[in-house]
Length: 127
Image (tube, rainbow, N blue to C red; front, side):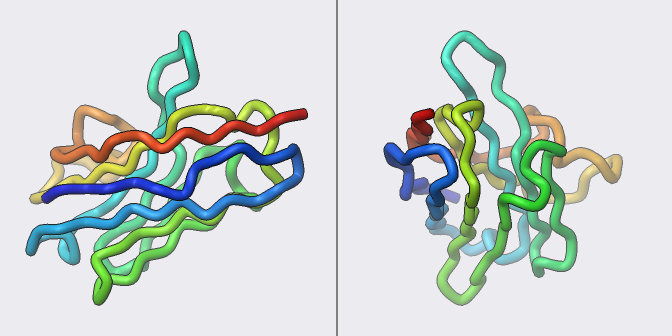
């Protein structure tokens, strides 16, 4: 699976961006997809997750009510709609795919559980 993240940019606080993760590979529609972010000098952190059919969606606490993850398997694409952006959302955002069975239900929180990663797309939120 190859992943291409896009949609980042510079936005003022309170603004919105929609990130797109476009995938190639026949297992994408059968796989969970996560978004992570990494700010300068900080560790990569979980942002959001969607399972293969969109029936399970998870968010970090600070993203709940502001971010929405969705997917279109016909287009091999996952979206992350980010509203009411805050300066603390500034980071490089990465999409990732986890394939195959996982041994515990909260695997999606952990970056090492993912098998494929796209390049980052930079999000900068000015105050």
